[in-house]
Image 1 (tube, rainbow over the protein chains, first blue to last red):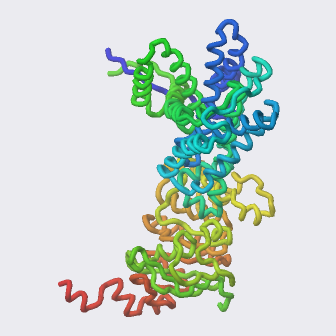
Image 2 (cartoon, one colour; image 1 turned 30 degrees about the vertical axis):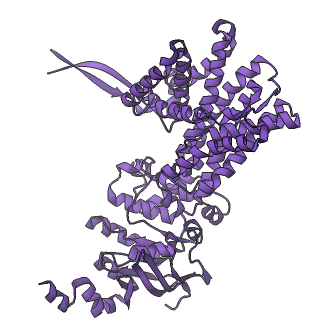
Image 3 (tube, rainbow over the protein chains, first blue to last red; image 1 turned 180 degrees about the vertical axis):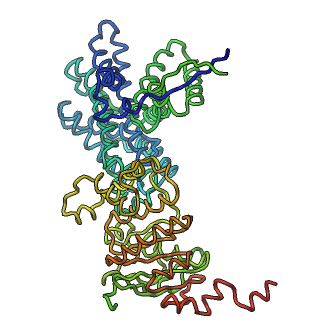
Length: 336
Length: 256
């Protein structure tokens, strides 16, 4: 007697996010569980700081900031702008915030939001001339811009030069340190998901799929691209603004390649185009990298090997795989 | 039918790296007119469409629409003025369902203006538009993912995408190419109806029989030059057109 594995999709009734789905508790749970579980986990984790230890709480915080950058990468990718330089947003937000606090003595409650907005404006303006470029040409420019700004600060010695600006005001208390990034991540995650499914988001996706058809639909695609870049820049600049006050120092490291590469890797690992994917990717990559610290120099080798295996084995990304499996069930059936 | 002149093209030329794609083409289009554009492959028909809609900037010459010059304006600005085109190669937004494809033009400032600042429910408007081009309203077809639609439907979806903007001048770039006989037969009345409602149409087409049946006037291009302009019968009997399509007798002799 032979057996064969059979995969079945769950009924469309339970999968669609429409009124039909509310016909029973089981179906509500089925839909809500994958959303509620990570949100609850994120909200509870900071409360457990005495159990988990401050070290891992800090890892959570860094994960959230990388998650923000990965979300900002994914939003730009949804308009067809592939970026290799999220560090631009991070660095711009970080430096403006640092300047506001260091030179104008603004408290964090003002310098973080202002730094986020001004940083996002500056980076959008820098990218504005190149939103017309497509594909790899846009990517190259985004790759060079953070490097260029870092060298500019180094040679002109403005904004503290190579030493940066230190002695910035600390954040008021530990709860703010832990909860602000968590909330920022959740707001961006669910906000972006909502945005992309609105009619506005359809226009953005249309630009990615076929920009000529959108143009001939009497829509100024460059204006929409600029808006998307700005929204993405706000998310990225906030991460930079927050980390500046957390570290109480801002230096050229804010433009480091890490802030470009890790979010990009997180998005690819987690699954592009879903926003949940890049978030999951960040929550795999950053803690993994911390865990591997114990191995010493071999860390990078193991880290890269895991990454290669993941990308080759799951090219669609962790999130898309998990979602597919969640909506299927498997059973063994007799054949022959 | 001596209507006002809607579009005036004055000596437009375009070279692509030394190859003359369009050479000093001039013509006029009156309101409510259906102009057919024919010509052998590579005669510059699509380039002409691209020149009119701003996707390609002309090297010289003028395009005047309703008395104001639109030469070299950005494609979205020209579309906003009401000159809307279909693409020869249909590339819909494949991951979206058919009616969601129409949300994008419906989101434009032009539609907002024409609907008096009131969008209403774009989904409903989109379904209505699809019904206009022959998508059965009560079937699943308008809700299907665009990538699963047959080619004929995609072509009509492309037409609906243009109609969403409520165009004043519709430019159809080989709408019938790749359509089956029955699909052409069901699309032709839609175009006749739109034209009957007063919409000016420029139709670039290879299907001469269908085109000659509905076009008020036909213009023929060859090697980027206008070789004939007149009623369908006049163009059909024009020697230059005949030789462009069939080859002149001397050329035949050389080939043999």
